[in-house]
Length: 311
Image (cartoon, rainbow, N blue to C red; front, side):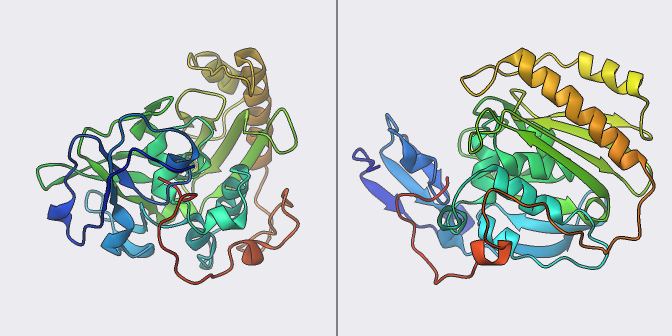
């Protein structure tokens, strides 16, 4: 929809030009921003004009390990086009989470990964993806520095994050070790093409660590960590301590709790089995969209920011 209160759109080319006046907000793709009225919004600062490389390899400045650095302005389509290296058995999770958004390829070509995470919606599937892979959120602070924190802690509630006024989500750094981990995925909604009511993933690390990530059914990402694949009772006890189940028209808390518990136990059993001799990039599950992922995320001519993109 038209944002009739917006009087100016600024396009910074350097970091020191990212300054927000009263009433201004950052713009990525705009798919949520342009979807409803934005009271008090008078200006936009278009982060896509900074020309950040969508996806590149780097080194974690804290731990020193190799990471995949996903720019906040990387579109979902660009992320889907990322080829899997040998051993990236977690790569199909990208497609699974992207399809959980139930958006057309047209939206994927504009919607940004960082915008989906920074919005903080319970059903934000890029939050599910990045939390599952133990990604780190890299935030540019107003003093010219940066801070880092796990994506699982970055989103704190419904449309709530740890971003302070004037701060910008710069990138999401995924440890390459996480991409080499086995993963599992479960999702349910109240209707065939409805918003996610519960989305549960699991990851079995190369060191044997077992991590369950629960999103959509909770107000914020919840992670349950175990040194090894847990028993049924240990997992159930951990699930029983979750106290932030979400309630909205897409599902009652009791249903979300029950489905999340069921999915978590299914994934416990699934990843508890020995790994097979499957190829490094397993066949992806079928989705609501009958076209191939390559077709859905096909390369299109560069676009300018228009109504219909993602924050």
